Every structure is written in structure tokens, then in C-alpha cells.
Image 1 (tube, rainbow, N blue to C red):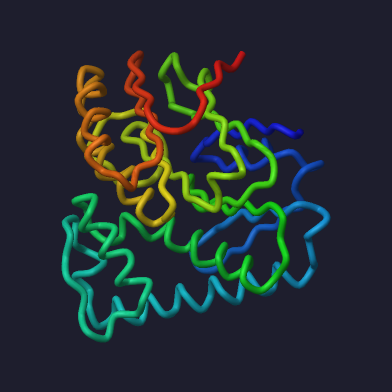
Image 2: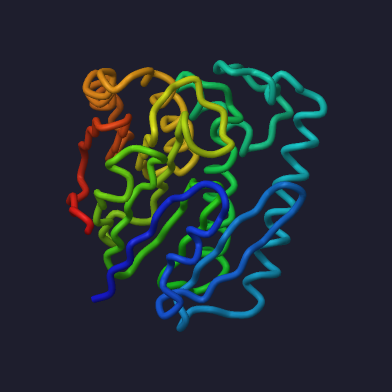
Length: 256
């Protein structure tokens, strides 16, 4: 049984090196400012997967930008907003995720891209294990357990705790937002908010929305309690300075 510890470090992207090369054959696809890391188990990997994934990324990015050109508020809004009748399916899914999490629809874009490309690969190729990472937002399908740790900036808890993801829980999405680390917009002060959901776009939106609520370490407990009101949240890890809150279906691991 193979285990893997993966540190979510937002910038630079050196965290991608923490994936075991013995477990995953990887490639990176980039288009405009989209940059996704794709890892596939060696026995399933095919060279044509990279071209397929890049074509998919190009298509969905162009499609979303075309919609934003006619509905610029979709991109600008920091709150849930309706979509026009001409909105593509991904925009509708992003808006639905944003509505549940109380954020603007673009808060779900990285997770949405990971999920769409991941599902497309699974539908068109026979793949045992797949990990797609897009700015700390991950779509994954596993055959063996994977232990994920969370980089949480200057927090003394950074990298100290891991969650064991079992194959039975996948495919799923695990997304991280932070107010003190990385380029993503956050109105909170959390060092890391990791959310797991079956839908990666929804995990992305919730990570942003819940992260916005943590202004100080004392907020961790009440925001963790709030996660219990959302059945779609499978697991949550909240870190702010020396405070951590964990709940959900994953087994916690202490990392050395």
C-alpha cells in the first residue's frame, strides 16, 4: 500500500515535487494564466493524455471568457449572482456553488477547471489514479490511500497534520484557501482553510467563503461549527496561527 504526503504550498509551485514520481507520471498544461499539474499512475499513463487535457483546458477557458465578455458582472461579483440564459454549463455550476457558499462565482473557477478536465480524462481513458492540481485546488481519484498535509504559512501548525484520503471517497475535490498565503483573494486571516466535497467547484467556493469568516484565531471554533450545517462538506481543516479545527470523515495523521 502506497502512501503519499502532499504539501499544498501555493507559490512558488515547488509543492508539485512532493508527489512521488514512483507513483505518478506527471505533466503540466498551461494556457494563458491557467497552470495545472496532472499526475496519473504509470500503468495508466498514455502520451496522448497531455494533448487531450490541454485541448480541454483551452476549450473551457475560451468558453468561459466568451461568456464573461457578454456578462462581465459574472467575473466581477464578490457575491452570488444569477447567470444569463446563454451561460455555459460550467458557469451555471460555478454560480450554483457560489450560491451555496455565499461568494462570487469566480471563487469556484480553479476547482471547476480541475473537475472538468479530471472527469474528461476519466471518461476518455482507463485511469487507475488521477490527481489534478490547479492553484491548490485538487480533483483526485485514487486506488491507494493518500495522506495530505497542509502548508499554512507562518503558522506553527503548518505541515504538522495530515488527512488520510481513502480510495472509496474518490473521485472528489479538495481545495484550500488562505488569507495569509498565496495569490487568491480572501477577506479573512486564516493561514489555511481546506474543504473536501464530492464536487471540486463546490469545495473551492466553500474554502473561500469559510476562509472569509476567519479574522482571528478565536474564530476557528465557530466557523468549524458552521461547516456542520453544509451536508456537502465531507471534511474541513481550518488553521489560523496556533489554532486548528478539524472535522469530517478523514482520519487525522500527525506528521513529523
